[in-house]
Image (cartoon, rainbow, N blue to C red; front, side):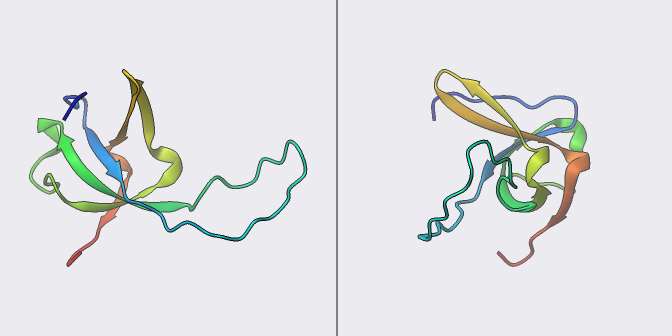
Length: 94
């Protein structure tokens, strides 16, 4: 699996789900700082801190605010972490 991380302090190690790519192109002025993706995204739990409890299970699909995901670069791989408090909800039946 390569680089792994053991979450601490109520963090969850998550994997972002793939977003559908749009084929349309729009030219924007240089320096434009618009929104960077959707406000909410679905992530899959890879691992969790033991203090998170049983309400979050490895493999769960969770809804989180995109800007709350913290990205960590380690040995050329990007790991995504989010605090359990920033989970908005869980997708059921997915």
